[in-house]
Length: 115
Length: 115
Image 1 (tube, rainbow over the protein chains, first blue to last red):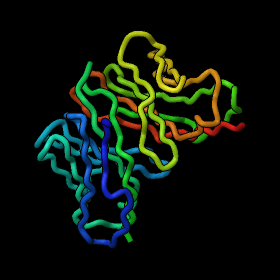
Image 2: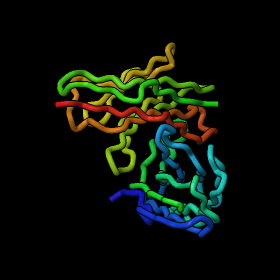
Image 3: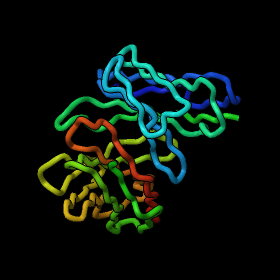
Image 4: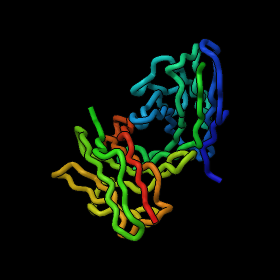
């Protein structure tokens, strides 16, 4: 089954404790992206990657890191989480198509709480 | 900078009635437009997209959307609403030129269909 998986689905942590949220897709997609979803703000892009070793900042990259060493994986790293990073996080991927990139496939989400 | 406006926070309709969920956009080039739906505690699911061609686009679950270039709108419609259509709906836009890989989402509109 074609899918984007994220782990963990739920995480409660404390300020300053480094964490990684993993994202993996099995569709051989070139493009992957991370979003955060907050009430009243919709989805905001954190980082995206157009292929292996190619990453770029989205709208809200501060406090986050990413890496793309393999095509299927795109982990999100919070080196020193803070309470304002409490949010619902989504990973997404898409393939190349007419005019650029096709529609994105989304993972199930990771609900992060930073105390 | 590209942007999406979803002017309503919530749309309420009775089952069996037609529904419209509004979206307007701003982009420098030709738009590449999407609608996504999010059911409670789930990730986003792709509904439909407009790239070029016919202004009326048909998508999943009986939804369709009409692209209007002069009004820079891409409203989502369905002739007869179902209670199961109740969800959060997001409109998104990307610059058709392709060089900009960023997908910008609106804040989302909650659709509530009453029996």
